[in-house]
Image 1 (cartoon, one colour):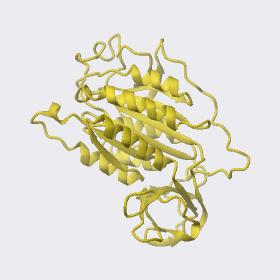
Image 2: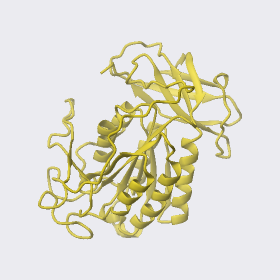
Image 3: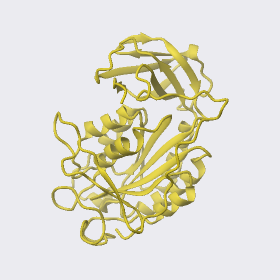
Image 4: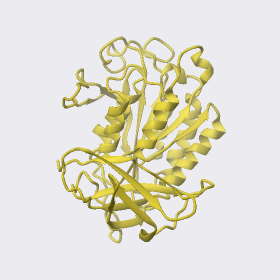
Length: 351
């Protein structure tokens, strides 16, 4: 891929059942775009900081949105309106507040595999508009493309201009033409994972984004994935990708954008995987087909949700930091109100 970006090289032993996962390496290319390495900005003095679960083991933070029966966002709930259960045990809320002004850390994952050839220009156009519109002063975002490789096109930045420039330089890469700049690992592109240079490394991209980019970030975190949902060749499986997002307290939003005519008679199940990932982490999937208007509306819907979030914080009655998965549920009083929140979290100890 002949573009200025950071190449993300997957470690060869990325996944082993029951064993600690090997870390990926970030290797800057000689012509990499300038990126920001500035420390995270401090919250406003009059704003109470929200500490994430990974930083304070006895506090769980649940970010969620609430909609009425017609699907309209409900923005004015209070602590008395909502309740939380963990493994079916009621929890006592320590904090509850609307999070429309808290800084947002956002990752954009862009599918640049061969199946996205016809829809990539739509993703670039409306994705750039969304980023320029949604990023506020203390927000930051990064951009990753995935195909036969996982590439960091733009590191953390608050600049919509830099993100737009990186997005517009994304190319379809099949490691065999259609925009590929030679075989990965030979002259252009990153070193491929084990096996033939083909596939769509969706699950690897989510896993690496959560672990390497977002696990140590605090506050509100989300990943927006523009893809047909099909994964081919990832070293991690779907459950591991979901687990990585849950451990990093990241909300996944899936925009299902697919030119189904390009699949022919091939088996397609990308919508199922994308929907599961989103719902397990507190987001949801939006199917836009290959329609530009629907894609624009999907970005607007996600923006509205990110700006109309609540956070409920509690100290769990089960105080063991034993790494086990805890199921959580959030409910709010009101006729037909529906809460959109992650399904659970991992009780991790302090690092």
